Length: 354
Image (tube, rainbow, N blue to C red; front, side):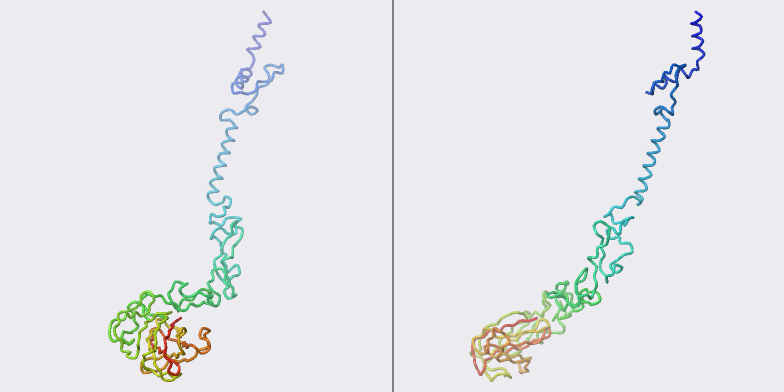
């Protein structure tokens, strides 16, 4: 009985927390206290145990979340990693898209052009740069000193004229090009829309009518003209080229004298130059020994005369005649076909121009 009373006294005298803490810890999954044979064992504190609600472990997790949110905000402000192709030159990039900083073709040692950026944003692309005057068409150049062979005003969006090269910029010079349809006679045009350059049907040897202008070619349109006061001519062939006219001098009279041949029957046609340039008239394909001459009017004022032309390989030695004449837009001439020493026969007159 006395021993039991001592046990009860010992139990009542133990601190309350030495009994409750082990049970409280086990209720949250903590390890049970180690029994070392002492009085109730050693308790496990919060600092050596697991997470407890709002304990120190939860505070650490919240701090990590806050740091993550701050990093995302800085990236959106442009301090994140560089992205090649977004058009913004970032740290570590030489260029991006069209963002070259202060650089250009000129700062890279060229005369001009459009600087580019390579696919990795690590360097410049100078394929669009050029040095005008080095005789090599490069970058955005259109020419180098002269216009490339085969190119003309039509390649630059115009209808006619002479294309040149600007030696200072190596770009096309279109100042001598013309645009048919703008209502202004310019360059090699004979007319443009209602602008007839002061010409009339009568000026071309017709007796009446209204002179027109071709909207497609800016050359005179004689379809509205009537009659002819060029009484010496047999045919009006208009203003188109190339064209070929067939005829005969058989039965014709002698209307105009030629300086390069004796008198003989001739056939006269009227031709109008649609644009300025060099025109060729020849009698290749004719059946006899021909003579060809050109005149400003029926009075016989001669512009040129040819009997035998050996410069054309189709003529042979002495079988045909050819004339080359520089004419202005709107010039009208009389072309006379005749024969050497009075020869007559069937002829083919070919007309070509610039």
